[in-house]
Image (cartoon, rainbow, N blue to C red; front, top):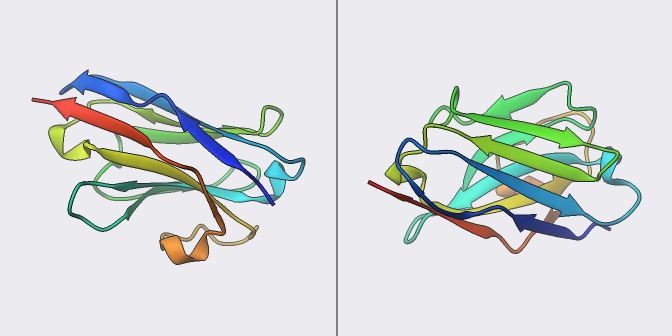
Length: 125
């Protein structure tokens, strides 16, 4: 089992940057594929990015490709989401998630086993 805690959200102007962190408890962090999802008010939760257990493979949603970067530090049991060139439509609560799977980088939330509580990101125009 793994417990996830996100941080780093906040208010930023359009064009700005934020770096989200997700700290995991437990000694098996390196065995989990990690993902970031987001949910805007009145909308369904959507996939943002995922990273393999070693960090060697990544996958991104088309809407954020080229602007966001997912990374992980297994020694610190932490996954990051670097967000650049932020747009008002990036406003959402951002969640990290862990998937007990070492093969696929799933984009559907139902494939992930553990979730953090979320951190809000607001991008003003």
